[in-house]
Amino acid sequence: MKRKSLLLLALISFALLVLPNGLYSAFDKDEPKYLEAAYEMVKSGDFITPYYNYEYRFDKPILIYWLIALGYKIFGINEFGGRFFVSLFGVFTVFLLYWWLSRWKDERFAFWSSMVLLSLLDFIVMSSVAMPDIVLTFFMTGALVFFFEGFHRKNRNFYRLAFLFSGLATLTKGPVGLALPGLVAVIYLILRRSLIKTLKEIPWITGLSIYLAVVLPWYGAILYKHGYQFFKDFIVFHNIHRFTGKIPGHPTAWWYYLANYFWLFLPFSLFFPFAVYRILKEKRNLGDDILEFSLVWFFTVFLFFQVAHTKLAHYLLPSFPAFSVITTWYLFNLKERIPLYLTAFLFTTLALAGGLFWKVKGWPLEGVIFLIPPLVGTWWAVWSREALRPITVGFLLGMLLFKWVTLPSLEPFRAKPVIGKEVASIKENCPKCKVVFLDFTSPEIVFYYRKGKLPDLKPKAVKRLLSGREPVIVITRENRLKKLKGVKFFILDKRRELLPKHSIVVISNYPKERFYGES
Image (cartoon, rainbow, N blue to C red):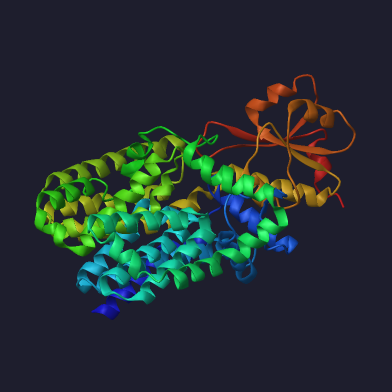
């Protein structure tokens, strides 16, 4: 049974998180930045300093760029190569959760907790893009799991593994990789009245030596190379200021995570509040070490990022393994029918709204097929009065269809990747052309261009270029063209963006024929 469970987890994990990752272009404003920075790293041979658009990028530590660059080296400079090793960490997290739970619970509980984790919407999303959050989640999960093992089994080697994983988390996203697992551990020990005793048992010298051996080589090298510039940008701005202040383009509202909770934790977001209520109501459940630790784990992570001034939805990803444990326990002991009915109503509404939205947008009808399995699964759960299996299977099938069918069907409607490749083709035919943005920038276009820096210029500078004799290519949104009043230009291409009501335009001081077929 255990071998079959592991094989099934492996097949679903790879089919969902890894294999389809070359079927769709880079998404979001963040993923293309990581893909492009790793490309520039491979191109330059500098594996210490991250650059994006040929300028310093000190947002995150180095490990995410190394993983993407390794994928490029093996699979080529493409989406699949860039995402491959990052997505593997989603698979690793699923199996790490299974390994941990199988040591404390029965095989069935371990399997379904891992399946619940694998089915959570934002876990799928962040395991499918080349960003550091799923890597951070794996290492934080490892740090917490090994701390738990060290504490309950009185094994100092597990504590050392916790330090190792905290070091790798710090190399992935900074000091939070140590601070957050440490905070969870301290709160858990305080609640168990074991803080002082356990602090004396932890092998601090060897543990910290392992941690420093992981983090010091790169942090030391980057500080030696860039000194105060790195300290100011990374430590002060991207760590301290992100936690205490507002970052442009990042939400700060106190209700942000509550508003995003329902889609982040689909399809089980409506079950979780009932699970917490049931655990706290039935006090005997608090004698379960796994449940107790998972509660501390989830709410510490949630409150940590709630307190942080700067908020993003995927910051909560390290709480997902704990959410899966708590939700699976509740679904094994399901008593209330209210969350079943609410979930069925929610997915019925989403299916109707999604189908209508698809029709209005005029997208290919085969793309909407992913909405059917979750809808069937939720109503199957209502009919059978057993939620765990039908909802999990239905949602996983829906997400498989989404990645293998829906996303590829939308590729022709993705304006920015097409524009980036088109402008790169123009640059190949016209090496002397100057290519710039006008009062606008797009990381997707930067990544798919790959012909050098794409500066973002103000209207006055663009007007001057368009008035000259040297050929210039300008990329902007259509509504920015009014800023070029009084200057003659030719529109080379115009494409509507997938979701926003904007069109991306490519203009030049020469007509389209000038740029094709030129040697």
